[in-house]
Image (cartoon, rainbow, N blue to C red; front, side, top):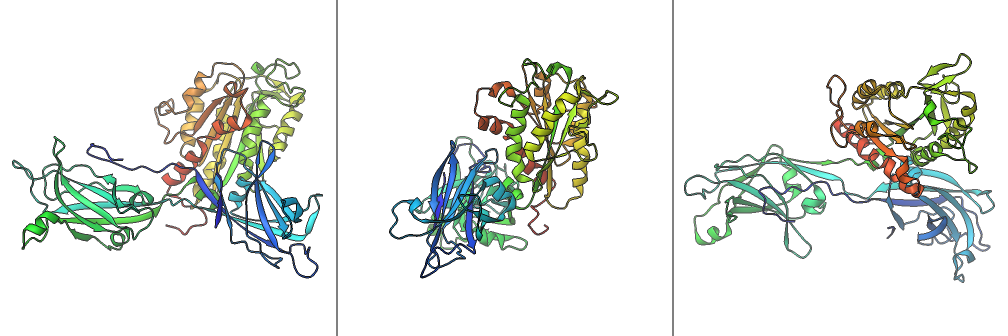
Length: 545
């Protein structure tokens, strides 16, 4: 039991790509050493899960009651939809059941634990003490929450050929193609995949193709699959050659290849000596896991976060309200808002929550030389700040002690993070991925050098998020974001993948902070997954391939 939150065409080929849906996570809960609230026996605990909606706790579901048990292992699971780019705050509250109670608050409270879903999935198995309403420990009581992805991300890759197929064309041989159909619960067949057409041959060899296993057979390797072979005609009246039925399990059992009789039922009925209309050969069948972003996070991948802040003179004097660095009476500005929007989410995916925070474009004491790569806490050997709050504090503290200058150079700070990302190239599994957040107000000064650094960084486990604050012309930033075309260095070398995401803050000034965070972090999961797949790196908790 669990609680839950939350075609055919006439073309020659029909391919089924990955199915994009919300990632669903199952949460299992156990508790230990709970407070004993009953006189004649032990407590009868149950767990209630809440999520935060507009500052209020809304109940999602409850487990069963574990009778007379201070160390319950709850059988009921909680299923929640996981969104990387959102702060999903959860509250696990444990109560001792009172059979006479009609309201939740009438049950005896045994303790609670509050965290984000991001913290749970980044730890995979989270063990924490329970806390009472007064903030004190609930005795020795503790809770353990385990996360598991529910999505079936297996894919099947097939390589097929034909042999001695029936000749259907009067002036030639045949133009064969295959269709794969799966059987629904109602017994009807549904088209899943159509191969390309191979012209004028009775011995075709089709290109290898990959489809999600859930598309081919609903994830059930023993579910029947029907394979039909046709001779393609330009007028749409394709001639049926034959068919056979099999399963993914049978195809994957083949050591080298497996051969199936291609049967035409009508011919089989009419001709006593009919054997087949040729053969379809499964030359290769591999079922593998198509790893998702959540697979890598649950597998232990750490997202290493670095902030780069623009302190050039075009930002204005931070003591004047017109400055982009001016901290208003509410204690904020666009720089701080951008840091918090990204940092509050991404910090859940780094266990020590220590983040380098760097500045560029300012003159530093005591000699007032310009630096394009300095620690905003003024500790060059240890530029780390404790959590996103530590970054905000270091940023506010450094403003009175530096002189805004210029120019706006990105290359040094990109190179700084790339040096650390390059060290992770030695990893045999997906252990670390680096994210650089650059917040800037203006036109970039070292475009050629920056392009070169980004092209080189595209080979590393690294992404760059650029947030433009103020009302400047950000056309150059859009150019660096390779959504429209592949980014090239000044020497013509192409980036191997798009690692830059640019977001103008002005588009979100009046939007909720959640909307800003979604836009900023929208591409990061895909970039992480793409890098590890290109390098053929599995999650850290899997066996080597």
